[in-house]
Amino acid sequence: MASRKTNRWTLRLIGALMLFAILAGAWGWWDLRHWRPSKLEFTMQGVEISGEDGIVDFNALKATGANFAYLDASASAFARDPAFVKNLEEARAAKLQVGAVHRYDPCQPAEKQAANFVTVVPRDRAMLPPAVDLDMLADECPVKVSDAAVESELMTFLNQIETHTGKATILKVSSTFEGRYHLGAAIDRNLWLVRTRIQPDYAGRPWTMWSANTMYASEAAQVPIRWVVVQR
Image 1 (tube, rainbow, N blue to C red):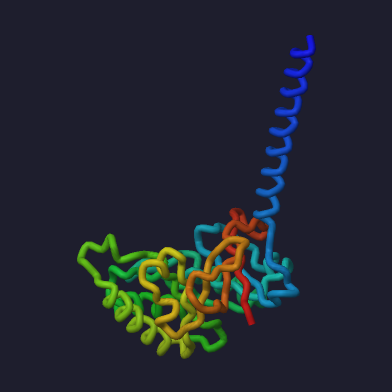
Image 2 (image 1 turned 45 degrees about the vertical axis):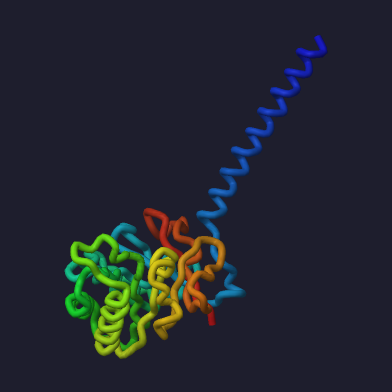
């Protein structure tokens, strides 16, 4: 009899622990999706938006505390975000500061990528500095591209788009790209790093922008979006 009671209490304890674990996991998931860094610590906050985010209410983003929106504009030598023009107009109408992002492809010539970017992004001094997303590696290129060539072509690209925009580029460097090429310290540009919830340190020097939550849930968008802060 005592053994049966012990077994029942053991099962009840296990059940309670499992329920607690489920509830704690659900709360942690909800908290993560709605977490943003404190405005007291980071007064300038905003978002990165692409066409894949669907319809975005930029006025709602402004109301929730966004100061700026970086919009995905172009990628590689030919790809363009189909929502860039619409997003640009609507973000400006919402009185957000706006910048453009190019996804860099180390397999494609710098000149062709720069031509793609300048065709999409207007020459407008009111826009924020352009950002270059560095995540793709050259390891899978059809023609071998050396590490030295990756850096050289990237510098050519930066110089050409900076001539167009009149502003120094921000390097949005992933931990994968930095671990492969170590360009965070080699290229003298402001850095934009990515790591949800925990401040990143993988580039070897201080960052200017931080994608603090890449799965931020907001009523302003149909899907989770990327929340970004600026370090003064």
